[in-house]
Image (cartoon, rainbow, N blue to C red; front, side, top):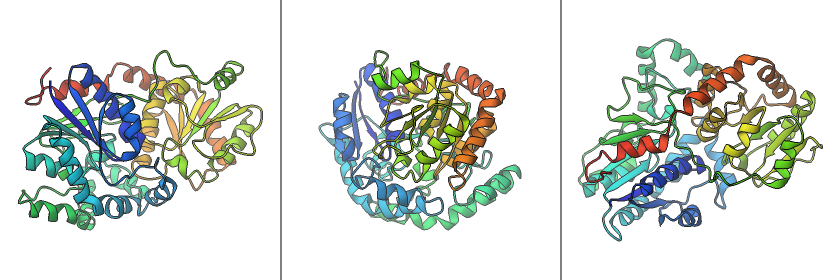
Length: 427
């Protein structure tokens, strides 16, 4: 039996796929611990995993969530604020916490880390530990052959993408050179520990030389020539806390059973903390279309303009609700996008920042949805876009086809199969 430590920062969209893989590794007989933000302690311990806290406690779910979301979801400066203003100032604390988690109570055999755990490559190299990188979204690879939509320059990214890999590669080199200073704290710590310089920690330096798990479906992206050679495309490792026996809340279930399928409006687990007028405009859009609506509002106050064909709930498992929707409006987080595709539903994506614009563009290229900017999201524009989605059969057909392909994937099992091939793991 191997001892495995999963380390990650971020929202539930970052944590849930790792929980799916962790359950699969535990089912195969391995001991599993998590090292992540203190906010998730009760959740993970309640699921039966060992827990070690890792500083900083940066999750949208903690007490400072709303302020954090506003800053890091800024399309132009959000990534810089997250990396340089939140994560890397605590690099040495993260290193200390992760090192302790790996060595106590006995040294781990394997480390699996998300790409924002900048201490992970340092600790793994220092301890001579096998490790794997887990990425949730195609954007993480910054491929010149599949150029992502970059939030600071979405239109320019789309233009450059069409010009081919040579031009795209030049653009990516420019981006990397202008952000090189972001990784300075990592290079300094590596030098102090007399480790190899490594690659740029924000880009190629985050990838393990042993294994990279691409935790998304091939319907969104295919492996590219400039992906790390040791990458395994697993499919989505789905987990949202639901079980086969679990049912929706009675009030919501009654609503769903007593009328036509509704439009579901959600902002995931992070963007929901900075909704602006999203819910108010969404209710008005549903009214314009004479459609029923379900609003997933998190901890926000219920929208005051509700009417009898609208129901607002804090949160329910997407896997239980999305299959019963007519269409889904969401922020473009990869977890939400994956669940919407899995349900075979056409979607309208209103991205905030990070990978969300790129995910939205991939949904559009797939033919399974449309996208609208946050600035343009009004009841009139949303109703217009939703009308096109609901009235054009091609969107639903593309979504159903994507769902059929995803149903043949088992992301958690595929990831586990790749992990057990690493030395000292087995089974």
